[in-house]
Length: 636
Image 1 (tube, rainbow, N blue to C red):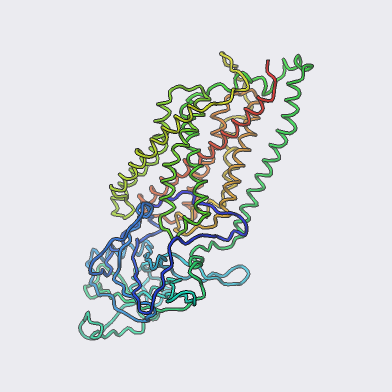
Image 2: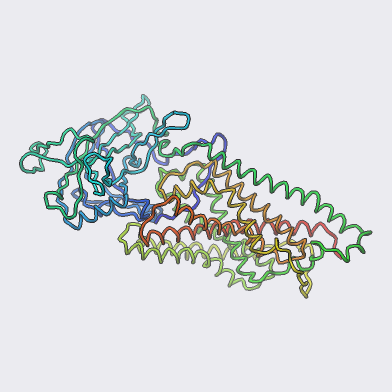
């Protein structure tokens, strides 16, 4: 399952990604066997991964599953051995096998080609990639890698020898393997794994023989000028015959082993990321100026006026935020639900910060497949103690007493929503026979993490929070609530949510595009320096936006600020979910009901957690602001 949430971050500096590849280099001696493992089949049009051997490929004598971590299983990876036999430094051409496709196999292969599936392989922990040449605006050309290779292509008038609309299989693979040698070590290190796929309708003389010395292929040397191999489910047995071949080419390279991932992680022109940062900084500077004006001028004037003994009588008929001092700390409605939401928001925020630290140390590099998702899940469970602690502190400040209900809500509300949605989705994915369906054993392991680790830690956090002490409130709360006067139109909750959510969303909009592209277009995202800045800007924007709106609300004698401060900035999650529709229609080509449901369900989960996190930042900032301003005035 391709749930991937807002990746991780690095330092800023020149924003050159630094990472530790996570595995020790292996030096291959001449003629030493180099293993190729096969991974899943994936498509940006269906978002449903499949096992490599779900299609009629050549199999080894014994198919062996390789070890996978939790993140790889959730990603739908199925890593197995293959029939390819490659030796270090040996340039050769080989016939893998011949298969006569059954009509059902040909139909399935025809469907997967039209669905634009790509095949993924692994060699020496490097994913197979197809090389692309990109021309920059200044005329320079750069080499980029695209993960995997296309299963086939759909014929068109531009494709020589193809019938428009026909499906053609890439049955010949040319492995271009790059290696690096150095006097510091013996042997050679593999630093590149390129695949050049070709479609060839192989012909041979006489009868077929599995003995390569007896087989006489007539389609050598293999090249793009040969007739392609069409997959026609309605064809005869001879037309459904597929001969799988490959050849190996070794090339020396100056790229060192530690830098071999650079082409995979290249994110294109950095200028658009800098534009995103400058755009976000402009929003932050604007809000900072407004907050500074409120704090340094307006509030200072208000506090001095409220504390002046000469002006006590003049204040009787005036309005302002001081007049609601006896109601500003009144517990909000549904206090336990608000405290639970705050606790979950802090849980996600703490998980993100620790993930940043791990990424900066290189522990979450792409060389460690599935590590990002595995670490995120474990950190979310471990941060249950932070969720319980923060929820308990907020609930205690709200004068709440039902701590058992708070514990259950914090442990099960939002995690239950996320796991419930995924559990339902899993049945649909399983119905498509996709490898993305989470096995019941893995699902049981996730439930054990939830019940045996996360829930006890939430309970410990709530217990610690209730034992903790809060500072005495700066003002006392009256028994009878004050009547709230009619509010101006610009203080309507919908309008403040519009303003409070669009600015934080606008601050991260451009970077969100690249993050969503890495998730749904299956690209690498590794510009953590930019993302670290955007995260910091997001926190500052949410905090300042919440303070400004809270001040305007209190000045109009509306003391119900708790839920409003959360919803004002939390509405950024609604903007993210709305943007997912725009991205779906403008960028993606997803086909099928299950794939569409998968996309919007995952985006709902991401938007929910994003909204909870931004809302929590807004609430905490408003809470600090309220305590500061009412602690500065003298109240009779």
